[in-house]
Image (cartoon, rainbow, N blue to C red):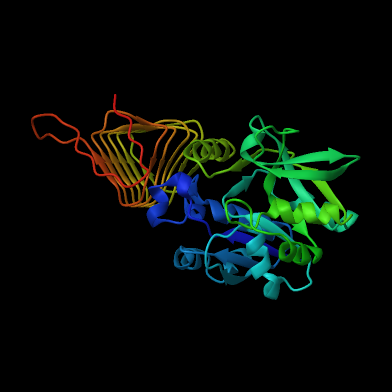
Length: 353
């Protein structure tokens, strides 16, 4: 069995962060989202992984390498444009050949991994096994209708959903899927939809079974989902201190201080993580905050936020519910008269009290 990980796409919902960075490499609790998926694949006993890459392929390749960190053998599959999930399967046939495989969307996060999904597929041997989750807003997802324990119909982002069971970004297939992706036509948005390919299997009387998510699942395509995933992961971690915390500082609750980090005259109230070589000086870090590597936080307060690497937050009264990109500077200026000076990219959002 092989794995196909999708790491293309433009990440438009996370702009401007994704103008300069792959959305799959945005860190959750100081670990890139994509790494959680690769860990889950390795834990399920799969060794060969194809990663579909697009415009950000150089960044993905640099971060993942050959996959040896996880005991994986990684092959990169370039996709000329984000033409749909089924298109990604179509161009991956030379890698996948006749093997069964799991398809994993690289910006998804599953608390319990994919072990049970893979085990059920091996045991029941359907043509496809689709991971589903009950959601309050099914109109934003592909939606599955079930009958007698099988999936009977799939609809992509329906205006009037017929169930609340959303298709999660993890799928199991045998080689029948290749005929399906070659038989369907592009949707109205110009993409080959994986839901259409699965519906083709259903219409041809092949067996498509559901597998319901037991723990939590997050599609991290939006800021709100990133922050919630960060909260969920941080809340499950254990306290660890590999850095330096001076006697004037306080660590409360679950706090991880990584190698080379410094906490000086500050309070860190967990769950929170301070990354390698980061500096927290005369500051307050509140719950559910992840400070990434080589970042400096000084004379500031922050909670429920993610700060990416090499950034500086200085003399800022309060930041919350925020995502601050890499190499960014957020600071208060002493220059008079007082005014906001802002340089932001496309699709940005700034809220000023």
